Amino acid sequence: MSLVRLKIKGISYSQTQNGAYALILNEVDGDRKLPIVIGAFEAQSIAIALEKEIKPPRPLTHDLFKNFADRFDIVIKQVIIHKLVDGVFYSSIICERDKIEEIIDARTSDAIALALRFNAPIFTYKTILDKAGIFLKFSSKEKDKEDSDDSIMVDEILQEGETVEINPGASEAYKELSIEELYAELDKAVASEDYEKAAKLRDEISKRK
Image 1 (tube, rainbow, N blue to C red):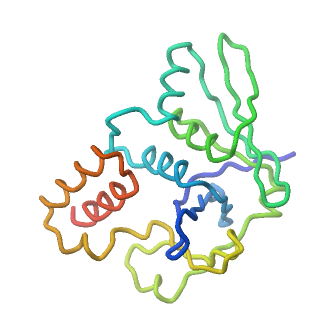
Image 2: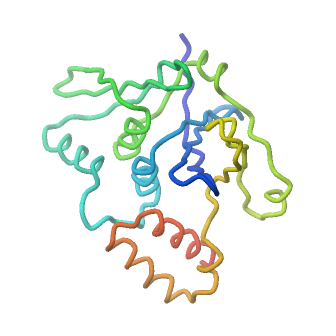
């Protein structure tokens, strides 16, 4: 079966449903997106890996796995999302140690969090993308934003019918803060391990550079 390489488009979250996150993957040589429901912890771990400037004071679980693997010369070569059953994606992590390749079953969210830390490529089969891939539509509100991203209806992913936006950015309150205050709040958020807040603060800081 033909493999299709994917890249991370962004992490989306429900504006009204707490703890509802979706990871949006985009095919590298196409326009289809693959939305995958993930938990809050995995969403934060992936966001931290994507945001290089946020350094947790202590290693997260996926960072610990990376440190452990490095110590024992284990390398993740690639991640393959290989099965879709009743809306649940199944993934495999392809590892190598001493030139011996091993395949490890993993939740897709964990597999992708690790792939980011190892700079490993992410793939799925064309049949899965044909079945679950979607073309995300722009909302009229998002079209007016200079660096807007796709927005989708969450019922496509969570069957709840609520709107989800990718990389929604900082809240209105952060826009009132000075750049110095934003950096101070960022330091506090990282120190308290509130990485969701840290990512939003980082977004607001990036907009002002």
